[in-house]
Amino acid sequence: MISSEDMNPVEVDWKSNMIDAPDSSRLRILFGLIIREIKDFWRTALMLTVLSDKDGSVDKTEVFKKVEEEILKLGLEKVWEVKPLINGRDVMKHLELRNGGPIVSEWQQGYQS
Image 1 (cartoon, one colour):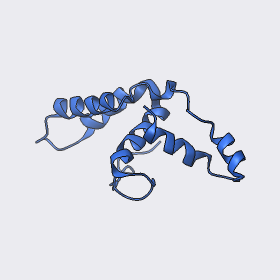
Image 2 (cartoon, rainbow, N blue to C red; image 1 turned 180 degrees about the horizontal axis):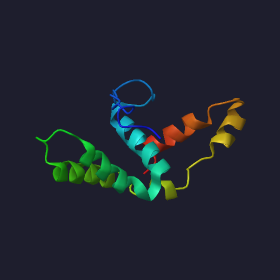
Image 3 (spheres, rainbow, N blue to C red; image 1 turned 60 degrees about the vertical axis):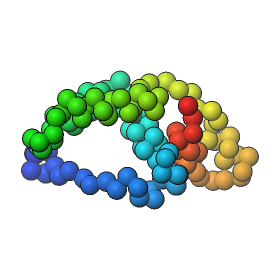
Image 4 (cartoon, rainbow, N blue to C red; image 1 turned 90 degrees about the vertical axis):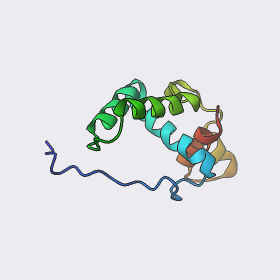
C-alpha cells in the first residue's frame, strides 16, 4: 500500500522533446498514448484527476467538460479500438532496424485520424 504522503504530483512539461513531433501533434500523441492504455476508464480517470485537484478556485465541472471536449475533438475517445495504419515490426524489417517499434506507434498516434 502507498500512503497519500508517498504520492506527489508530477510536473510535466508538455512541450519537452520526449516525443519528436510538431507541437500541434504532441498533445494528441500524449493523450492518445494514455487513453490507449486506460481504455474505457479514461473518463473515470479524468474525473478523479479533476476532483482530486485541491485548487478551490477552479470550476471542476468546467475543467472536466473542456478536457473531455478536447479529447472528443481529437477523435481519441475510442483510440484503443483503432487498428494501426502500419505494423511497426514491418517498418523495422524493411528499414533493417533492430529497435524502434514504439516510435512508429507514437508517430501514427500523432498523424492517424
